[in-house]
Amino acid sequence: LPPMLLIPIIENAFKHHSDTYSNAGINIDIHVNSNKLIIKCDNAYNPDAQRTRSSGLGLETLRRRLKLIYGTACALDISKSNSIFSVILVIPLSTEAAINAAETNTLYNQI
Image (cartoon, rainbow, N blue to C red; front, side, top):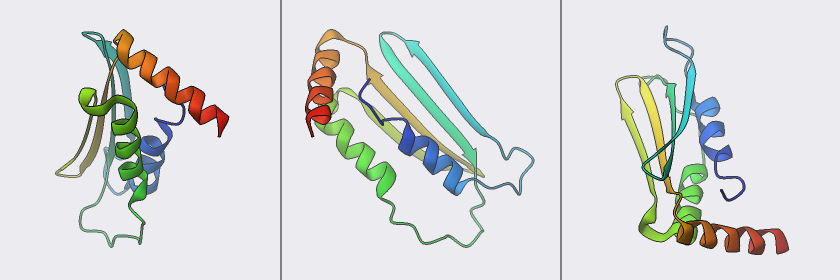
């Protein structure tokens, strides 16, 4: 797994969560299914609250990094439903994807 992939997802959940609902927690689920790593992060948010100014770059930068590393082999789904904000990241655990990620890690560490 390339470094720093989970940090933007978790930071986003803490930055934008709402504690005004009874289900105000942040839920993180990580599991493997069909040779894919699936990471899901849900947090409560208040759609009626005034939005704080944000660059909006955290998840967009993550999306770009994933595309560079995995191409179309991975998925990043961002959704809002009622008072829940959800991010689902699906990363293949195939040999080819792992080699590409390892090469990216090597380049990342050389910078």
